[in-house]
Amino acid sequence: MTTQARKQKGGQSRTSEHRFHNPQGAEVKTRDEAFAAPMAEVSAEALSTECKLTLHAGAVTFAIEVKYNPNTYPHVVTGGQITSGICGAPWDITGGAIGETIRLDAKRAGQGSCANTITIVGEYQNPPAYRGTYGFDGATSSFKHTTRYEC
Image (cartoon, rainbow, N blue to C red; front, top):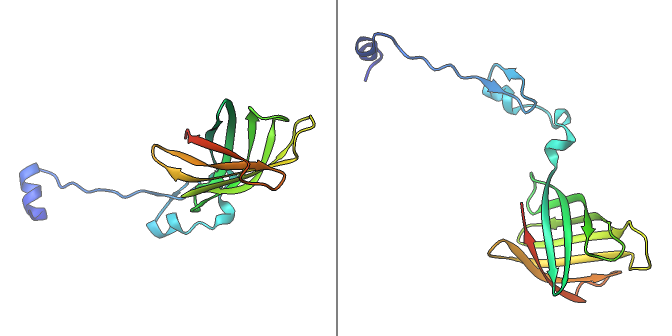
């Protein structure tokens, strides 16, 4: 249908106005400006999100809160904590990655005579979970686990 036909049929022509916004939410004039914002202007919160994991190893259950960069894949782990279920909780997560496999490295932040570090590794499976092993003070295969992804 031509513009003239639309005018005749509807009595008015419809124009659509495009509005563009940059990552900070400010309105800009063009699409290019919306996507051209330098990364320096993006807050740290935009580069991090959180998810919850629950590690099950027999009668033991760890509650895990992971912070990771959603703009990477596999997702780079930027922090978090193992908040309960393990001697010496909380444990500060110091690094790792989440993707087709998982690796979480953490060090004990709580009190007690427990190990100083833990490493959790596993492979993705459906429904969303990771099956693998974990160990203390450098070991990664001491105990079997299934870790549910709860994001």
